[in-house]
Amino acid sequence: MRYAAIDVGSNAVRLLIANIIENNGSVSFKKNTLVRVPVRLGDDAFLNKHISDKKADDLVKSMQAFKNLMEVFKVTDYMACATSAMREADNGQQVAERIKEEAGIDLQIVHGEIEAQIIYASHAEVNIDKDKNYLYIDVGGGSTELSLFSRGELQASKSFNLGTIRILDNQDKEETWNEMKDFIREHTRHHKNIFGIGTGGNINKLYKLSNEKDGSPLTYVKLKSLYNYLDSFSMKERINVLGLNQDRADVIIPACEIYLTVLKCANIKSMYVPTVGMVDGIIQTLIEKNINNAG
Image (cartoon, rainbow, N blue to C red; front, side, top):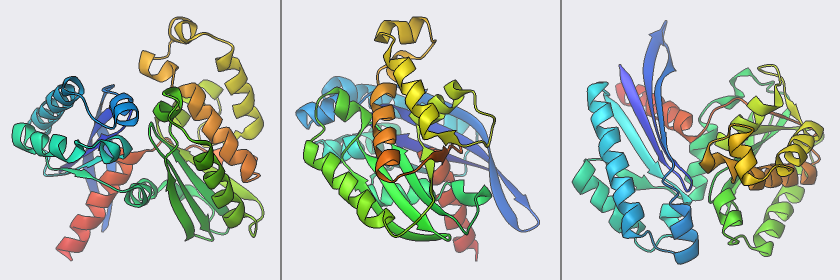
């Protein structure tokens, strides 16, 4: 049995096809195929509040390709979610309707709070000590989702209109940065020794570049020095010398800035990077939905 997750983000659109494994009553998944297309809807959505015909065409073509792949892989259930770029575009709903008509994919435009729920459904906390305090930090192209857990219980969760594409396009606002810092201070001041959990494509890439051993946390100090190192290269050098994809080489710098700001504000010294993201959370959400329906 296979499920598929589609994440229509502000920087890229992703399709994850996963094999569903049932073993002694427990259900898990193994990644089969991951496809990523750098459509970069955020450039339109954050600057013009409107998705251009060109970007809409690219998105529809990507969705048609995803639909074909899902059929070839004999996917039995799927879920497709769009986040902040589609939320903010005045024609987001029209584009979603076009995708339904031309690609046969039912795309849901989800609110920031739902996005946060899906991200922490990725079960990044499975290997984590339930007695400790954790701040989930997911940085995307258009928004940053923060969720504070204490002793395994969700204490607070909020989505902020701060993301890598938004910063590159100078569409981030000082009051949003301040609002995020206020949220962090308010909800972390009663908790000592908070650990970070970083999710999203940029932190996964940063973790790889850090050469940390799998499972080891990434320290604030290491992330800061990695940021300084990456920032010392031009965009072109980050592509040609460091081998970063073009659509990663620019966003990785503002991503670092957001992670460093959050860690410093919350007084977090180290962050776990379970290399999961929105698509993993969607697959987990599908698993739980189907278990509940079967029950």
